Length: 313
Picture 1: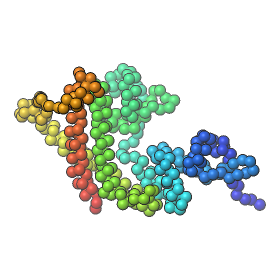
Picture 2: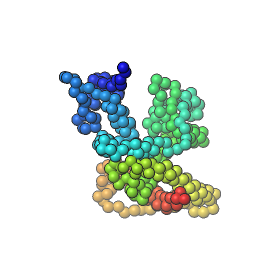
Picture 3: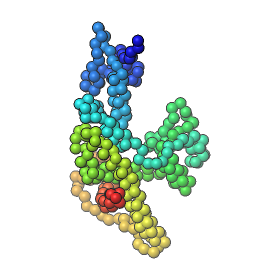
Picture 4: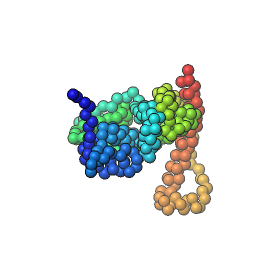
């Protein structure tokens, strides 16, 4: 006569099976994230459901969820509201936002593309920026999340742009692009996703519908930015070429310095922050950042609505 055998674990065995530590398991129990074990005499025993729950928690933590939000999701699931749709929405948002495939590059290939000489400082900075990722156990090979981004850097370097200038430009560009992404998310959340995500957590049906909407809207931000960047480059490149050919006055802001009166308290505060010798440069940079921020906001407001209309049919 055969029967179904139920696997049971002691807490040490559960830790080994799930990859969590004993201390973490106990902490999850105290927070209410993990069901209490059954009592067998003087011992606590855990089952496969505990292993599955620990794997779910680890997966959600990897996706950036806090323990508090994970507890809400799991409580909703335990209450019978379903978690499949929510996890599908998580997977959709966490998935790739580009068709580009990661690649690998050897140290020798990097050196050949960037001057032919080893430059550990440049490699360390590229790793810090996420342009390269180290491969565990391999000092002579790197993962390249975006081969296109690395290829652009190589082309700029070949054109004579120093590596320090390339990485500085990338840092500045990244901040501006993250601002665009943040504004696009605020825009779509307010106008589109608020009706799906009114509950915390949403129902299974709402999460499934929201995941479908993410798939539809995923390309809109890039399409809008591509179109607006092309428009701006066409306009500004023509203007700069005419200037350098002597056909028109310099673009606004170039070669034109003006005296601006600022409150004494403002200047004193900046001097305390960066020193008197850097005060003018700091104020100019802060003003430039604010101008760029407002320009990006205006671009997103005008371009975002157009992109939404294109995808509505």
